[in-house]
Length: 195
Image (cartoon, rainbow, N blue to C red; front, side, top):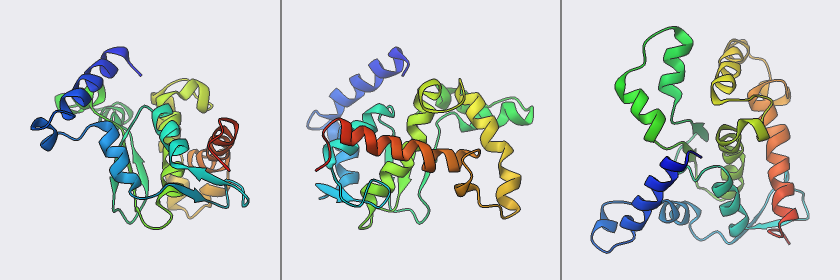
């Protein structure tokens, strides 16, 4: 994460913890706690049928992914990068709006999940995207967010053609859920966040 962005968000988080302003601004940690609800541990087939993972493990992955904003209550879990407007403009050859540029620099990535019984495992799956976008060089086959976006756009026709992109690790969705998500579960096991 950009050090200037992190300083700004850390400052805003401290302000958000104050009594009156806290009513208007939700800090990143408050956002995470609200999204996790009462979940203290969860299991998932992808993480290994014999393992339960702790809330702290999910929080560690959330921190690894740059602490994106989590929205709960969607029917379709998804990840929305903060710079999607600017990247789309550049991809289509248009000039990005000032709002897109501002959001690209100072906005937050957003993860949307349903928050039902399997909300924590759904969150790990979508944080798999966020981890890649936060650090593409380490977690993806690409060196930048721009390259990641370009690859994602190239798979859109395949999705519309009905191809099973989640089963093909050459696609963004396939790589994210077939390679990165299992690595994150392994990370939680290695760090002692499973039992």
